[in-house]
Length: 295
Image (cartoon, rainbow, N blue to C red):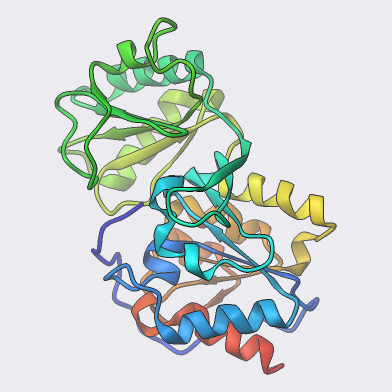
């Protein structure tokens, strides 16, 4: 989840680490990574994804997006048809097409943990406002800004939305969104991680001061590891791509990883390689080289 603003404007040719185990799975973020800034999938990228699948390499989309925002890539899933959404909070089967996805695995944020995180962050960063992302519903506080192109299902304080008697208790909470109108994004992330501790996982994927709070131990990396274990795929056989702090764990875990040319500095430091920016089809450039045996 991020808007169209680039974090950096670095443009360079793909850098490649030393050749290692042949890849069996490609894990790629979407916004700022696979998608261009206009949220499209370029014809070159579509062709590269299809070629990877034809070569027997599974492709997993691994994103902070909720399942209902996956229409942009639902026509480009092959084979298994699965995507990891909500920063690892859900594994979704996209085979049904737009609006017909099915939740295969849900790693929820327990409501008690969510309430604790809200309270701790309110104390540490006064002025923070919240939204609640559930499997199918989206709820927000009245003062939460219009950051997402959708109408919330309800407006109420986060404490009421997360209460045991809330009308939405039938649905698991996937993550909490926390926005601060004044703090610098990375400073807000550091503050929140210190305040919340191990009661939840805190990350960010937006260039604004918008944090994403998931269940303890839930991340793109941990859910991807579970999906790979089910397939008998080791981390050495995974090639990953990303651009923002919510990708760091996944890039560190994968045997080979690539930061986009437009990536956050923490991502550039975490990845084992670097490719060109999302608008220059950086993911496709690496896949093409992989399939041509140049890596």
